[in-house]
Image (cartoon, rainbow, N blue to C red; front, side, top):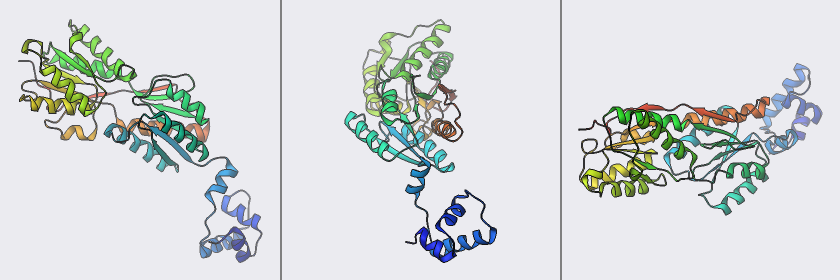
Length: 335
């Protein structure tokens, strides 16, 4: 591989002049600059990215820690982060911790060694305090996705209370009085917000959310299926007419359980999801859901942290994106 000295020798200039031409750090006579560029092209010289990064104390690399990249929701958010990074000349270093503390610590050490410029944390089922701990360990600007406001860490999330409100109003307007919720883990901040939104919507409609129809899950297909099976195993008067699942993956499990019980959706029971992952439109029946803009979450997070790096723009304390209702075929009307 050609070195900067080879270029200087071929162009008959000093190494310093070659550096100034490549980095644009000082005026160089046009004829001389052209001679240097010609030598660079002819010799196939490529400046060392590592050396330049060390000199500038920047690597143009963003680290990202996720808990489970196999969930389509996570995958679509990651896609948004990656595309925004690429468009702005940054690389993304992705680490999937699988909720394993040992892996989290090992990845944080590796990210520090790679000299990342900033860190994005996709919280998922992490402890709410984890992003602040990661920010301290990584010692770089840190932004948490799908997280609560945490001291020392910025956050980008959807307004899950507004999303729960939308879902509750929609189901109430369709005449349902027995509405079940398959939630996420109790410590998951978005789950608590969605539940509060549903309660507020039903309260405004003069209805109560029956505590017996609130079934906790872990936002996976299996937990959605198990929760729906438990709901449908009840005597007919205690079964729900409609089920609001707190993400699309658990809604997929709920649809499977309804099919296994010999029930039609939405003829016998209606099912609603949250997220609007790409797969939601292809479920059977296509899923009515609350869209929170998965790719937009990722792009807004990446843009916010890159703006901070490049222009010292303040990171948002909490940037909340407004969800919206997407009507498809999985919700009918109360009989």
